[in-house]
Length: 337
Image (tube, rainbow, N blue to C red; front, side, top):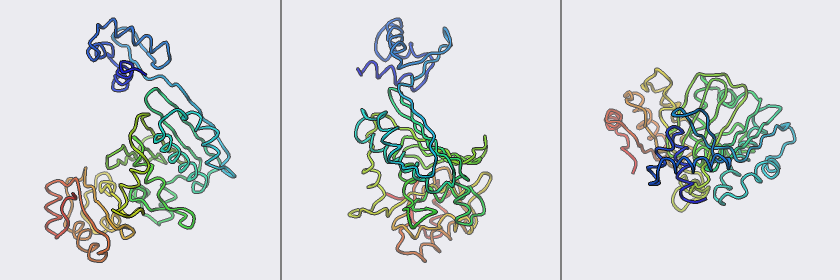
Protein backbone atom coordinates (compact mmCIF):
# COMPACT_ATOMS: atom_id res chain seq x y z
CA UNK A 1 0.00 0.00 0.00
CA UNK A 2 1.57 3.32 -1.06
CA UNK A 3 1.94 6.33 1.23
CA UNK A 4 -0.73 8.40 -0.52
CA UNK A 5 -3.27 5.61 -0.09
CA UNK A 6 -2.40 5.33 3.60
CA UNK A 7 -2.80 9.09 3.95
CA UNK A 8 -6.26 8.90 2.38
CA UNK A 9 -7.37 5.99 4.53
CA UNK A 10 -6.12 7.60 7.73
CA UNK A 11 -7.84 10.84 6.82
CA UNK A 12 -11.12 8.95 6.50
CA UNK A 13 -10.46 7.09 9.73
CA UNK A 14 -9.99 10.39 11.56
CA UNK A 15 -13.12 12.03 10.11
CA UNK A 16 -15.31 10.88 7.23
CA UNK A 17 -16.50 14.39 6.37
CA UNK A 18 -14.88 16.90 3.98
CA UNK A 19 -12.24 14.32 3.12
CA UNK A 20 -11.41 15.54 -0.37
CA UNK A 21 -10.51 19.02 0.87
CA UNK A 22 -8.30 17.72 3.68
CA UNK A 23 -6.69 15.09 1.47
CA UNK A 24 -5.86 17.63 -1.22
CA UNK A 25 -4.10 19.77 1.38
CA UNK A 26 -2.22 16.79 2.81
CA UNK A 27 -1.01 15.53 -0.58
CA UNK A 28 -0.46 18.93 -2.16
CA UNK A 29 -2.79 18.18 -5.07
CA UNK A 30 -6.00 19.66 -6.44
CA UNK A 31 -9.35 18.74 -4.95
CA UNK A 32 -10.25 17.01 -8.23
CA UNK A 33 -7.13 14.83 -7.98
CA UNK A 34 -7.94 13.98 -4.37
CA UNK A 35 -11.50 13.06 -5.33
CA UNK A 36 -10.18 10.83 -8.14
CA UNK A 37 -7.99 8.98 -5.64
CA UNK A 38 -10.94 8.53 -3.30
CA UNK A 39 -13.02 7.15 -6.17
CA UNK A 40 -10.35 4.53 -6.88
CA UNK A 41 -10.41 3.47 -3.23
CA UNK A 42 -14.20 3.22 -3.42
CA UNK A 43 -13.95 0.98 -6.47
CA UNK A 44 -11.44 -1.28 -4.71
CA UNK A 45 -13.70 -1.64 -1.67
CA UNK A 46 -11.26 0.01 0.72
CA UNK A 47 -13.67 2.89 1.27
CA UNK A 48 -17.44 3.34 1.50
CA UNK A 49 -19.48 6.48 0.86
CA UNK A 50 -22.95 7.65 1.85
CA UNK A 51 -24.72 10.90 1.05
CA UNK A 52 -24.20 13.42 -1.72
CA UNK A 53 -22.47 16.71 -2.31
CA UNK A 54 -21.25 18.53 0.79
CA UNK A 55 -22.98 15.90 2.94
CA UNK A 56 -20.86 12.98 1.73
CA UNK A 57 -19.44 10.83 4.50
CA UNK A 58 -16.67 8.33 3.78
CA UNK A 59 -15.91 5.25 5.83
CA UNK A 60 -13.42 2.41 5.80
CA UNK A 61 -14.68 -0.58 3.86
CA UNK A 62 -14.82 -4.03 5.43
CA UNK A 63 -12.33 -6.21 3.57
CA UNK A 64 -12.80 -9.44 5.58
CA UNK A 65 -15.52 -10.58 7.94
CA UNK A 66 -16.26 -13.85 9.74
CA UNK A 67 -18.63 -14.82 12.54
CA UNK A 68 -19.92 -18.09 13.91
CA UNK A 69 -21.79 -19.49 16.90
CA UNK A 70 -20.58 -22.56 18.79
CA UNK A 71 -22.04 -24.74 21.53
CA UNK A 72 -20.02 -23.94 24.68
CA UNK A 73 -19.83 -27.54 25.85
CA UNK A 74 -16.86 -29.30 24.29
CA UNK A 75 -15.61 -26.16 22.55
CA UNK A 76 -11.83 -25.67 22.15
CA UNK A 77 -10.62 -22.10 21.76
CA UNK A 78 -7.57 -23.15 19.75
CA UNK A 79 -9.77 -24.81 17.13
CA UNK A 80 -11.87 -21.66 16.81
CA UNK A 81 -8.67 -19.70 16.31
CA UNK A 82 -7.24 -22.08 13.72
CA UNK A 83 -10.39 -22.66 11.69
CA UNK A 84 -12.19 -19.30 11.86
CA UNK A 85 -9.87 -16.48 12.89
CA UNK A 86 -6.27 -17.20 11.90
CA UNK A 87 -6.97 -17.34 8.13
CA UNK A 88 -8.40 -13.81 8.27
CA UNK A 89 -5.28 -12.44 10.00
CA UNK A 90 -2.57 -14.53 8.34
CA UNK A 91 -0.97 -11.68 6.36
CA UNK A 92 -0.58 -9.30 9.33
CA UNK A 93 2.73 -8.71 11.17
CA UNK A 94 3.72 -11.41 13.65
CA UNK A 95 3.31 -9.20 16.73
CA UNK A 96 -0.22 -8.25 15.67
CA UNK A 97 -1.19 -11.87 14.99
CA UNK A 98 0.20 -12.85 18.40
CA UNK A 99 -1.93 -10.22 20.13
CA UNK A 100 -5.06 -11.39 18.34
CA UNK A 101 -4.32 -15.02 19.15
CA UNK A 102 -3.79 -14.21 22.82
CA UNK A 103 -6.86 -11.99 23.13
CA UNK A 104 -9.37 -14.08 21.22
CA UNK A 105 -8.35 -17.45 22.64
CA UNK A 106 -8.25 -16.11 26.22
CA UNK A 107 -11.70 -14.54 25.89
CA UNK A 108 -13.19 -17.61 24.22
CA UNK A 109 -11.74 -19.77 26.99
CA UNK A 110 -13.27 -17.48 29.62
CA UNK A 111 -16.66 -17.83 27.96
CA UNK A 112 -16.30 -21.62 27.87
CA UNK A 113 -15.08 -22.06 31.45
CA UNK A 114 -16.69 -19.22 33.40
CA UNK A 115 -19.86 -17.90 31.78
CA UNK A 116 -22.18 -20.83 32.48
CA UNK A 117 -23.71 -20.16 29.06
CA UNK A 118 -24.77 -22.58 26.37
CA UNK A 119 -23.47 -20.73 23.32
CA UNK A 120 -20.39 -18.73 22.37
CA UNK A 121 -20.47 -16.40 19.38
CA UNK A 122 -17.20 -15.20 17.84
CA UNK A 123 -16.66 -12.62 15.15
CA UNK A 124 -13.91 -10.62 13.47
CA UNK A 125 -13.90 -7.97 10.77
CA UNK A 126 -11.07 -6.14 9.02
CA UNK A 127 -10.64 -2.87 7.24
CA UNK A 128 -7.48 -1.75 5.47
CA UNK A 129 -6.15 -0.23 8.71
CA UNK A 130 -7.44 -2.25 11.67
CA UNK A 131 -9.44 -5.21 12.87
CA UNK A 132 -12.24 -5.54 15.42
CA UNK A 133 -13.17 -8.77 17.14
CA UNK A 134 -15.78 -9.86 19.64
CA UNK A 135 -16.62 -12.83 21.86
CA UNK A 136 -20.18 -13.12 23.14
CA UNK A 137 -21.82 -15.60 25.49
CA UNK A 138 -25.33 -16.10 26.86
CA UNK A 139 -24.31 -16.83 30.47
CA UNK A 140 -25.18 -15.01 33.68
CA UNK A 141 -22.86 -12.07 32.95
CA UNK A 142 -19.28 -11.51 34.05
CA UNK A 143 -19.95 -8.70 36.51
CA UNK A 144 -22.77 -10.56 38.28
CA UNK A 145 -20.64 -13.70 38.43
CA UNK A 146 -17.76 -11.84 40.09
CA UNK A 147 -20.16 -10.07 42.43
CA UNK A 148 -21.48 -13.43 43.56
CA UNK A 149 -18.03 -15.02 43.85
CA UNK A 150 -16.64 -12.21 46.02
CA UNK A 151 -19.92 -11.42 47.82
CA UNK A 152 -19.76 -7.83 46.60
CA UNK A 153 -22.49 -5.34 47.42
CA UNK A 154 -22.60 -3.84 43.92
CA UNK A 155 -21.72 -5.41 40.54
CA UNK A 156 -19.81 -2.22 39.68
CA UNK A 157 -17.18 -3.34 42.18
CA UNK A 158 -16.47 -6.29 39.87
CA UNK A 159 -14.99 -3.92 37.27
CA UNK A 160 -12.49 -2.63 39.82
CA UNK A 161 -11.44 -6.21 40.65
CA UNK A 162 -10.90 -7.02 36.97
CA UNK A 163 -8.87 -3.85 36.51
CA UNK A 164 -6.50 -4.84 39.32
CA UNK A 165 -5.68 -8.20 37.72
CA UNK A 166 -4.95 -11.58 39.29
CA UNK A 167 -8.66 -12.30 39.77
CA UNK A 168 -10.43 -15.45 38.67
CA UNK A 169 -13.51 -17.30 39.86
CA UNK A 170 -11.63 -20.58 39.27
CA UNK A 171 -8.16 -20.19 40.82
CA UNK A 172 -7.41 -23.92 40.58
CA UNK A 173 -7.45 -23.74 36.79
CA UNK A 174 -6.88 -20.09 35.86
CA UNK A 175 -4.39 -17.36 36.78
CA UNK A 176 -6.69 -14.37 36.40
CA UNK A 177 -4.41 -12.69 33.86
CA UNK A 178 -6.33 -13.01 30.58
CA UNK A 179 -8.66 -10.01 30.78
CA UNK A 180 -6.06 -7.83 32.51
CA UNK A 181 -3.41 -8.25 29.81
CA UNK A 182 -5.90 -8.20 26.94
CA UNK A 183 -7.19 -4.86 28.21
CA UNK A 184 -3.64 -3.48 28.10
CA UNK A 185 -2.42 -4.81 24.76
CA UNK A 186 -5.30 -3.87 22.44
CA UNK A 187 -5.92 -0.35 21.15
CA UNK A 188 -9.42 -0.62 22.54
CA UNK A 189 -10.92 -3.21 24.87
CA UNK A 190 -14.53 -3.26 26.08
CA UNK A 191 -16.68 -5.47 28.30
CA UNK A 192 -20.46 -5.12 28.16
CA UNK A 193 -22.71 -7.03 30.55
CA UNK A 194 -26.04 -6.10 32.08
CA UNK A 195 -26.20 -2.31 32.14
CA UNK A 196 -22.49 -1.92 32.88
CA UNK A 197 -19.72 -1.07 30.43
CA UNK A 198 -15.97 -1.11 30.96
CA UNK A 199 -13.73 0.43 28.34
CA UNK A 200 -9.96 0.71 28.23
CA UNK A 201 -7.99 2.35 25.44
CA UNK A 202 -4.25 1.75 25.23
CA UNK A 203 -2.46 3.88 27.79
CA UNK A 204 -5.52 5.20 29.63
CA UNK A 205 -6.88 4.42 33.10
CA UNK A 206 -10.09 2.73 32.04
CA UNK A 207 -13.67 4.02 32.15
CA UNK A 208 -16.83 2.52 33.66
CA UNK A 209 -20.32 3.56 32.58
CA UNK A 210 -23.67 2.46 33.95
CA UNK A 211 -26.76 2.62 31.77
CA UNK A 212 -27.86 1.97 28.21
CA UNK A 213 -29.32 -1.16 26.69
CA UNK A 214 -29.27 -4.26 28.89
CA UNK A 215 -26.86 -6.91 27.63
CA UNK A 216 -27.78 -10.51 28.44
CA UNK A 217 -24.61 -12.48 29.11
CA UNK A 218 -21.28 -10.86 28.24
CA UNK A 219 -19.85 -9.20 25.15
CA UNK A 220 -16.13 -8.50 24.88
CA UNK A 221 -14.89 -6.31 22.05
CA UNK A 222 -11.29 -5.72 20.98
CA UNK A 223 -9.71 -3.55 18.31
CA UNK A 224 -6.15 -3.24 17.04
CA UNK A 225 -4.42 -1.38 14.22
CA UNK A 226 -2.58 -3.54 11.71
CA UNK A 227 0.59 -1.47 12.15
CA UNK A 228 0.64 -1.63 15.95
CA UNK A 229 4.17 -1.80 17.38
CA UNK A 230 2.92 -3.31 20.63
CA UNK A 231 3.82 -6.90 21.51
CA UNK A 232 2.67 -9.36 24.12
CA UNK A 233 6.20 -9.48 25.54
CA UNK A 234 6.37 -5.71 25.99
CA UNK A 235 3.06 -5.68 27.87
CA UNK A 236 4.01 -8.62 30.07
CA UNK A 237 7.33 -6.94 30.86
CA UNK A 238 5.58 -3.69 31.83
CA UNK A 239 3.89 -5.47 34.74
CA UNK A 240 6.88 -7.48 35.93
CA UNK A 241 9.51 -6.11 38.29
CA UNK A 242 13.11 -5.78 37.03
CA UNK A 243 14.84 -9.16 36.72
CA UNK A 244 11.55 -10.98 37.35
CA UNK A 245 9.15 -12.67 34.96
CA UNK A 246 6.05 -12.87 37.16
CA UNK A 247 2.97 -10.63 37.22
CA UNK A 248 4.13 -8.57 40.22
CA UNK A 249 3.07 -5.00 39.36
CA UNK A 250 -0.31 -3.49 38.60
CA UNK A 251 -1.76 -0.07 37.83
CA UNK A 252 -5.19 0.53 39.38
CA UNK A 253 -7.56 3.25 38.09
CA UNK A 254 -8.81 4.75 41.37
CA UNK A 255 -11.78 6.36 39.64
CA UNK A 256 -13.31 2.88 39.19
CA UNK A 257 -13.86 2.88 42.97
CA UNK A 258 -15.79 6.14 42.69
CA UNK A 259 -19.34 5.39 41.63
CA UNK A 260 -21.42 8.12 40.02
CA UNK A 261 -22.30 10.89 42.42
CA UNK A 262 -19.89 9.69 45.10
CA UNK A 263 -16.72 11.11 46.58
CA UNK A 264 -13.94 8.90 47.89
CA UNK A 265 -14.08 9.74 51.57
CA UNK A 266 -14.69 6.60 53.62
CA UNK A 267 -12.48 3.84 54.96
CA UNK A 268 -14.90 1.27 53.53
CA UNK A 269 -14.28 2.64 50.04
CA UNK A 270 -10.53 2.48 50.67
CA UNK A 271 -10.79 -1.14 51.82
CA UNK A 272 -12.62 -2.04 48.61
CA UNK A 273 -9.90 -0.31 46.62
CA UNK A 274 -7.05 -2.12 48.39
CA UNK A 275 -8.69 -5.55 48.38
CA UNK A 276 -6.09 -8.07 47.06
CA UNK A 277 -3.31 -5.47 46.75
CA UNK A 278 -1.18 -7.72 48.93
CA UNK A 279 -0.91 -10.15 46.00
CA UNK A 280 1.33 -7.64 44.22
CA UNK A 281 4.79 -6.35 45.04
CA UNK A 282 4.08 -2.97 43.44
CA UNK A 283 0.76 -1.12 43.02
CA UNK A 284 0.55 2.18 41.16
CA UNK A 285 -2.62 4.10 42.00
CA UNK A 286 -3.78 6.14 38.99
CA UNK A 287 -5.81 9.08 40.29
CA UNK A 288 -6.73 10.44 36.83
CA UNK A 289 -10.33 11.69 36.99
CA UNK A 290 -10.38 11.91 40.81
CA UNK A 291 -10.41 15.51 41.98
CA UNK A 292 -10.52 15.02 45.76
CA UNK A 293 -10.30 12.32 48.41
CA UNK A 294 -11.22 12.39 52.08
CA UNK A 295 -8.86 12.07 55.03
CA UNK A 296 -10.28 8.71 56.13
CA UNK A 297 -9.92 7.26 52.62
CA UNK A 298 -6.35 8.51 52.27
CA UNK A 299 -5.34 7.33 55.73
CA UNK A 300 -6.75 3.84 55.18
CA UNK A 301 -4.91 3.42 51.86
CA UNK A 302 -1.58 5.12 52.50
CA UNK A 303 -1.03 4.54 56.21
CA UNK A 304 -3.17 1.66 57.48
CA UNK A 305 -2.86 -0.64 54.48
CA UNK A 306 0.78 0.23 53.82
CA UNK A 307 1.75 -0.40 57.46
CA UNK A 308 -0.06 -3.76 57.45
CA UNK A 309 1.49 -4.81 54.11
CA UNK A 310 5.02 -3.39 53.88
CA UNK A 311 5.91 -5.93 51.17
CA UNK A 312 3.52 -4.14 48.78
CA UNK A 313 4.93 -0.85 47.55
CA UNK A 314 2.30 1.81 46.84
CA UNK A 315 2.96 4.73 44.51
CA UNK A 316 0.69 7.20 42.75
CA UNK A 317 0.24 9.02 39.46
CA UNK A 318 -2.24 11.49 38.00
CA UNK A 319 -2.94 13.21 41.31
CA UNK A 320 -4.64 16.61 41.44
CA UNK A 321 -3.19 19.16 43.84
CA UNK A 322 -5.99 18.43 46.31
CA UNK A 323 -5.38 14.67 46.21
CA UNK A 324 -1.61 15.12 46.54
CA UNK A 325 -2.08 17.40 49.54
CA UNK A 326 -4.32 14.89 51.31
CA UNK A 327 -1.93 12.02 50.58
CA UNK A 328 0.96 14.08 51.93
CA UNK A 329 -1.08 14.95 55.02
CA UNK A 330 -1.43 11.27 55.97
CA UNK A 331 2.21 10.54 55.18
CA UNK A 332 1.60 8.67 51.91
CA UNK A 333 3.73 8.26 48.79
CA UNK A 334 3.97 11.02 46.25
CA UNK A 335 3.67 10.64 42.48
CA UNK A 336 5.39 7.62 40.92
CA UNK A 337 8.43 8.14 38.74
